[in-house]
Structures are given as C-alpha cells and as structure tokens.
Length: 154
Image (cartoon, rainbow, N blue to C red):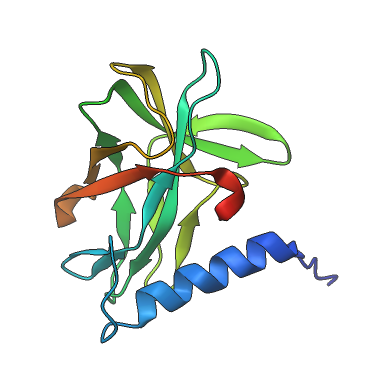
C-alpha cells in the first residue's frame, strides 16, 4: 500500500508549532488565552476585511480531554452571521462543525477550517477588537476577544 505524505509549508509548520507551544505551556501567563473544561483556546485574531468581503477568524484550539469535542458554531455582536468555512485544495465550502480530536491541536487557519463573519455591523480595522462566542456543543460556550491584526504578523 502506497502512503501519501502531506508536506506542510514553513508558514504552516511554524503556525502549528506556535499554537502548540501556546496551548501546552499552562504555567506561563499568556495574553488572550481561554479555557472551557478540557478545551483550551489560544490567541484569536482576524485580519482587517477587504472591501465588501467578510472577515476570517483564526487561532489555535486544543481538546485536552480524553473524549471527542466539537466546535459547532459561533456568534458575535460585530456581524450578522458567523459560519465555519473550510478550504481544501484551493476550494472553499461550508461545514456545520469542526471535530476536536483529543490531544491534537487544531489551528483555525486560511488553509483549513476557520470562522467567516459576514454582514458586519460596524467597520473593523487594524487595532480594533470584538467579542466572539464560540459554541462547543455539549461542552458549552466560551466568549473570546478577537483582535484585528496584520495578517503578515502570523
């Protein structure tokens, strides 16, 4: 049987390593990290929206528990709608949830699942922030602060 290996780009690898380091260092104080039971959420950020388009939200999530968990949705006072967008092989589509496997960090990122805000209720620009309610289904909900940051910094 032939095995297919997926090669990560340097940017993807560095992003995943940074997310893992942020989530696995519980004794080091971190700005903008959150916890809901066994679910740890790192720094959540978005880039400034381009003209007429939505806003993508990124950041690391880790299920530290032994059982399965899911991110089933999100909402924010900053937008009418938040959906989960999936990018695979250059194509985008919408999904209803993101599975969070035990012990396996997941980065909401441009090349995979991430949150997509549409119908913004106010202008968002670099330096702004807004609250986002993450829905983890049976595990509960968690409010996080999303920072609008330059995309090149991540």
